[in-house]
Length: 184
Image (cartoon, rainbow, N blue to C red; front, top):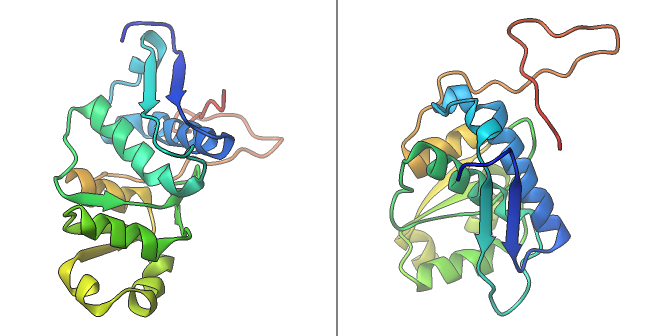
């Protein structure tokens, strides 16, 4: 909505989930140009992200890839592919990190009719070792190491240059090609 760069979250979000949401927004802002998002959008708009209340407060880093996907879908108008579920922690540099509870998450996704699951590459062993064979065969798995890979699977969006923003040393100045990330 029109506004002045405010970002609001509501719902049952614990402090770790709040961090995941903020990290997701930071990554999206840093890669706006590559994603086809008007970089000025963030300066003249407000974003309100609501996570509907469930039976328990949501408090974990596992929603990082989902939050990035949600924001990119919203800001680009690209719908998330149907029957795709995902989990994974993210870093500000775009890496997807492993998470816990893979067996429970995949079984729940299978129960509700999900056909494809995006998981961190480092959780591949959990699928081989922990899941019943019939569930493993019924689902298509995408094991990813980066947010760019998540965008390709979830939104059919190929990033042209998914490079991480560079950190400056204490004696360096910003150049015209450097990316700046606001951590506010």
